[in-house]
Image (tube, rainbow over all chains, first blue to last red; front, side, top):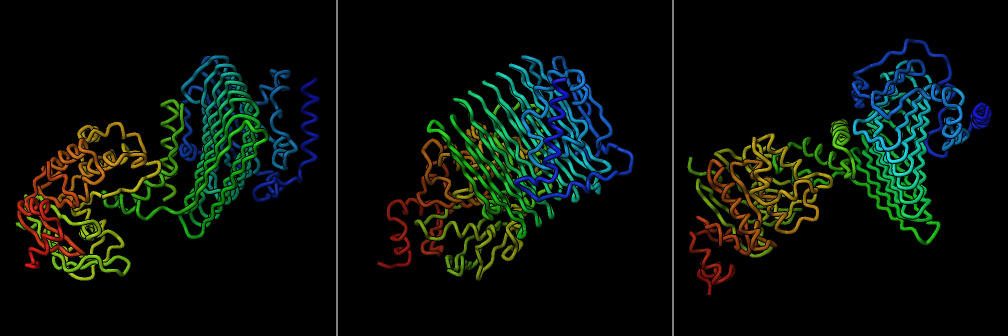
Length: 395
Length: 242
């Protein structure tokens, strides 16, 4: 009953925000995406492999449009199910996790997700369960329209896990993707989250993510957008209690006329909390990239590192780092730079025997290569593959 | 074919300013050539002109390598023909690991990156970003390691001994000897202003460049005379000036 009341409140709040634009990014007419779409949902494994999805994983969740769902976990201590099943089976618990970190009335995208969304994964990693193999999740849009999954992960005390999400779409599908994601990292737990996006030139993407990290917890996020996209806007929110650590990296490749507005905010709430927000933007063609980052601190330390590389005459990159210290016991820093590839570096590599194209590829790969601490070998391999694909596409 | 590289009457400008005037040099098989001269005399520009570095403009003269006139060819082509340049100060490459570069070169040429890194005592640098935080000696050792992996036919080596500690010079000299041994012509040009490396490598030919001109070339004895008289005095003497 408590859950039903809560969900009713969620729906009411959502209705009030159906025409509320997001503070950042291009405003999208969402009604366009609510019309019925015809066609049979069909997985395109060529597209999903481009974003690194491995269907042989021991734990996975696959969703096609809002119509097909498949999930399984063969890893002891790891539970994977569709979010609706979790809500139905655990109503009291669901009351604690569903729409708790994200306000359904935040903007029209969360509103439409709350009212029309279907699917999404629920992942629970039980206390002290430590797994090196990533949980593989795949959100694929085949016929277009709206896809608004609601993802929840609860990483219990002392657990250690990686969630890998690949999101992509059939080439000409006219789609709006709003992924609502709420992650709970409990005491001493570690969650690594890798998300790879490769959309198409007519798709709009509005992920809405929030993370709560309890004392001693760690959250490491690695986000990459490597495909064409009409517009993409996201601004994850991370709350850090005492002695916690968050690291978020965004690798953004702007292609053709894509408009990307990607950023995030970290709230340092407790002593010993630390956050790093890193972005690497690559501007090609006529793309426009805005890389935002904000750290708000009462205690602890935070650092923002935003860098951009312009690879064409017509692309633009804007970085907006913001620091807000709310008490003296906090240290916040940022660095930001935007430029083009130094000709001297290219020439140096040519003198070493590389072709010009190889030299540019090496420099771009270096630019997006990040030294992320504490990444298991298997996850590192995924990241290396992503770096390689990104550098190839940037050429 | 006796002549490997022939540079004839070369004049070179950078941004419209003439840096090198009418300079010639001839490299044969088994030639270890030292190009000496004071700071700012144009030695590095001379090597850059040979390799065809962008921004270095040949005004007159020509560069013949293995019988082919490379004077108007781009650097990429000249490197593909077997020339290479060890830079005095290589750029720092953000995010590019030393290991990644060595492995990429070794994939092309068939070498063992670990063996090369071991020879130059730079294994500890393999997972570092190229050039970042390297000491003077480490940077030079890293650069020679790259040349070993590149397997050129004729390496041009710019100031391998400047800003380098004594231990590093010995390692660098030993690697240069190995590099030269592995080339088909067993030849190289080494630019140096201090000639410290001559303690370990004995040149077969020494040339002196002053004010943008190769003034004199001579045998090993010329090197000893440089240490005694200095560059300018020696050049004056060679011209019979008092």
